[in-house]
Amino acid sequence: MRQDKVSLAMLRILDAIFVAVAFWLAYQLRLALPEHLPLLGKLKKFGDDPVVLTESWQALAMIIVSWWILLNLTGVYSRASRTRLASLFFSLLKTNILGIFILGAAAFIFRLSSVSRLMILFFVVLNFSILFIEKWVVYWLLNRFAVTRQPLDHILIVGTNDQVNRFVQRLASRPEEAVRLVGLVSWSLADVGREIFGFPILGTVHHLDQILSSRAVDEVIVIQPGRKVDDLETVALLCEEVGIKTSIVANLFDLAISRTRFRYLAGVPMITYTTTPIDEWGLFFKRMLDLFASALGLLLLWPLFVVAAVLIKLDSPGPVFFTQTRSGLNGREFTLFKFRSMVPDAEEQQSQLATFNEMGGPTFKMTDDPRVTWIGKFIRKTSIDELPQLFNVLKGEMSLVGPRPPLPGEVAQYERWQRRRLSVRPGITCIWQVSGRNQIDFDEWMRLDLQYIDSWSFMLDIKILVRTLAAVLSTKGAS
Image (cartoon, rainbow, N blue to C red; front, side):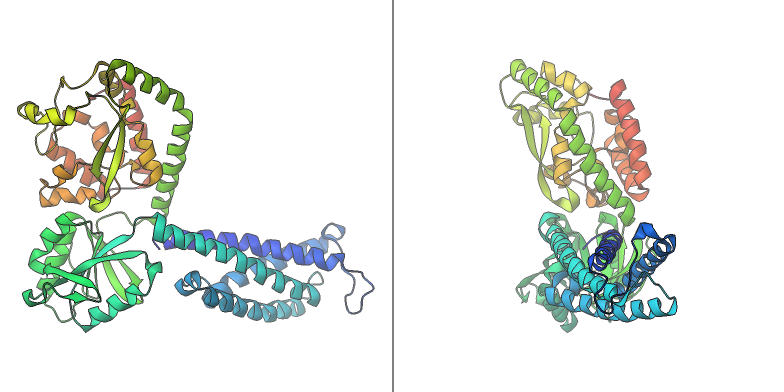
C-alpha cells in the first residue's frame, strides 16, 4: 500500500479511540453489576470520587500506550494481518493475553482501586471484539482501495536469473502489494521472447528506452547482482531522465535529481530512486484537498454549469462537453472533460491551421483561432471551460495542481527529458498558469513543470492555487 506511514498513523489514532470505548464500556458494565455478588467489591462512579476519576484517566493512558506497543510487537500492523483474517485474529489474541498480565501487574503495583480484576476481564473481551471488527472492516477497505480503486503500480523488472524467478513467483502470490508486472527486460538478446511465470521478456536493456515510451510503467526494478556498476547506472540514469522510479538490490549512484529511500516489496529489501515527491503526509493532504475542493466546487458551481451548458447549446450545434483522450500519470490514458469552446469538428480542422501554430513543439496554440465559438471565447478567457475537469480530479485522474495532461500524440513527440513531466498526476493548473500561461514557449513550459515536480510541497500547491485565482480573475495570458 502506498502512503503506509499515513495509513498506520490514522490506524493508531482509530485504535486509541476504540480502546478508550472498550475501557469505558467495561467500566460501565462492571458498575451495572449488583454489589452483593461475591468477590466484586464496591466500585464508585467516575463522578463520585475525584481520585477514581484521576486513576481511571491514568489507567486509560497507560492502556492506550501499552496497546500501541503490543499491537506493533504482535504484528497487527503487518501486511499479513492486513490481508489474512487468521493472522489478524491470532495477533489480536496475543495482544490481549499479554495485555491482561500488564494490566494486572500495573493495577497491583500502583494500587489502582478503579481497575478491578473483573473489569480487566470485561475490558480484554470487549477490546478484542471491538478491535477485531474494526480492523477487519478497515483493512478490508484499505486493501480494496489500494488494489481496485487506486491505479496499480506498473512495474518492469530488469534481470532474468533465478533470484528474479523467485521474486516474480512471490509477487504473484501477494495481491496486497497492489502492483502489476508489465514484463521483464534481459541483459541478453537470447532471452527475448521467453516468459517467466507467464510474464514476457520484452527486450534487452538496449530496448529499455523504447519499452518505457510505449508502456505505462511506474517503476523499474533491477534484480541482477554481479552486474557492473556501469550497467546498473545506465538503467538508473535513463529512468531518472524520464521520471520513472528505480529500485535495485544494492549500490548508490550519484544521481542529480532522484530522491532515495529504502523499502521492502514482497519481503525483498530495495533501494528506490525517485524524482517524484516522497512526502507522504504532504501527498495525503494534497489528495484530501483535491477531494474536498472538487466535491465542494461541483456542489456550489452547478448553477454556473447549467448556464454555461445553455449558452453553449444556443451558440452552436453540438455537445455541451468536449471529451478528449489525454495522457496522465506515467502515460495512463484517461478521458478529459471540458466545456466545448470550439466548433464540433475542430480537431479535424487543426491540420489545416498547422502553419499558424504559435507555441512550438508538439502543442498547438493559435491567437484568434477561427474554430473558437463566440461563447467559447468568453469561457476560455474566464477559464470556465476548465471547470468540468473537477470530475477528473474527483475520480483521481487529475489533481488541482500539476502539469497539464498532454495528448498521447504530443507525448510521442517528446524528447526524453520532457517525458518526466508525466511522473506525477496531471493537474488543472501549475506554475506555467501563473507565469504567463500561453505567452511562454514550449520548452520553458516543460522546464516550469519539471521545476514544480522537483520543488513540490503542499504549501507550493496552495500558493499556485492562490496565484491561479488571481490570474483567472485578471484573464492575463488566457486565450
